[in-house]
Picture 1 (cartoon, rainbow, N blue to C red):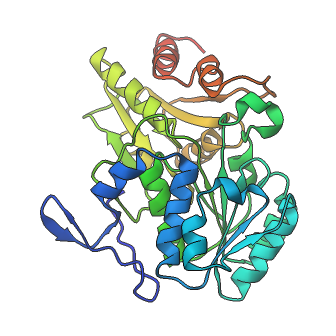
Picture 2: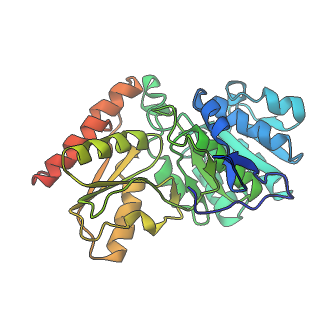
Length: 350
């Protein structure tokens, strides 16, 4: 995510950090901060980002639905006692309240369980963010299989599909906490209707050198000349895709791995190197229907001349309660599972 530089909001979020001894102005999250974020949960990282924004933006408003006590928001309350708005267990009202605040000029985030703040409030999002253009940043935490132990009702496996169909809504699925915080800071600097989904990182972090503004750009995690396989991944499961890509290279299969953290708008540079490859593979902790795989299929079909597509994700059915690790393993969303699926398809399987 080094191809775009964030402009600030009234000068308050301009990054000025040292990287490798050279002053640069494009990093929103420094290497030191990225290291600290690697030791946090994503909910702690959310609170960290909100406190950074609160320190420079007195218009910040964080609208929660009962869930606020779990989001590390004490730093926000210390700086802006009225910034956290509690709506109770009422996500539909939460989005309406957030939209009203955003339309009055406040920098507004609405955060809750990903499954509740998307599918449960889809009509409110469609009208307020889509039709009316309210610049609310909806943040879905515990997405994918994070809360799988609570059963299908708490798994957010349709949220990308729901949100990316709303015209004008940016959809972001960061790979780690550093990228998550950078996305929130960028959206605070440039408010727009947006959805940011986040789950617990599967590694300490993929951005030890820090993160700059990068919404709208794909990021190459692993590159080779003349790739035979192009893996396009989104979310924290990108760490497994990267490990799989390295293993494929070690087995003699040239593999390019791309992080597509911004699913909408879609950066077509994700397909660089795909023409002439044998296979494109989408990897996501989301249903294989309607998410990244669907977006990749749509873009590839419009381009023409592309290789076959293998979509890896969660199956198109409701899953029984289980731990996240076991759910991902059963869905083949581990590095060994991805390698096996790719090699099987290259060998002529389905």
